[in-house]
Amino acid sequence: MFSPMDTAVIIKRCHLFSGVTADDLTLLTDICREVTSSRGDVLFSQGDQADGFYVVATGKVKIYKLSPEGKERILHIVQPGDTFAEAAIFGDGCYPAFAEALCSSALIFFPRHDFLQLLHSQSHIAIHMSGRLARFLRQFATQIEDLTFKDVPGRLARYLLDLGGDCQSVVELPVSKSQLASNLGTVSETLSRTFRKLSDEAIISVSGKRIEIHDSDRLIDLSETYKDS
Image (cartoon, rainbow, N blue to C red; front, side, top):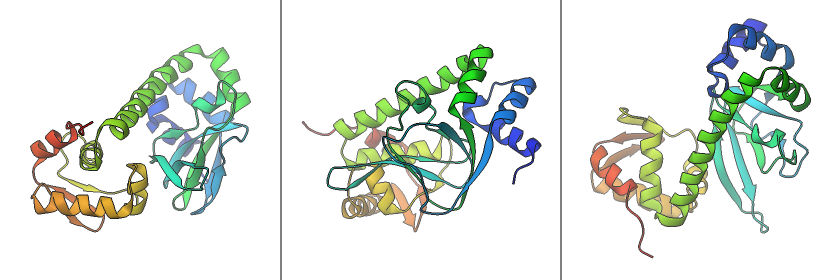
């Protein structure tokens, strides 16, 4: 279990609350609680009533949808320091997707009713949140654009560049390659061929989940290439 001090540190490191004051942290700590999940635990299902949102303290959570045929489509992998389901506490108050722990995870849960009351009394927290939610919507719009207009090599290139940030030449995949294939809107076989192609062209090298980027300029060019219509 986290102590109140530990919880405050986790919340402060969270992107959603990065600008809050010490007094705000106390208010936030007072209304949240710790939730632990094992690998494979489903935290909520699509259409469930949204009773709150989560901050990932440790572990990883995948957000996904299921097709009518039962095929899984990963929308996002939530890492420590990130939140999920925060938008669901507004609007119709239903979760728009499934959430499942990818490994043993410790989460901070904010109940919907208590959190909305806090936003009503502390409007500056809501302003910070709106900026974070706007960034998330831009990321989501970019994801939709990539799925629509870019082929698998372009999507993979963009993913690796985002994973590495501005200067990392070595990255570690946070998920399995089959999960990554789902996240990129393709199948494992196609993703494996794409990894081999980029390796053969000396753009990257692959060792399990460890990816070394040898030619970032070519990777950038690839990420900005749109598929033929």
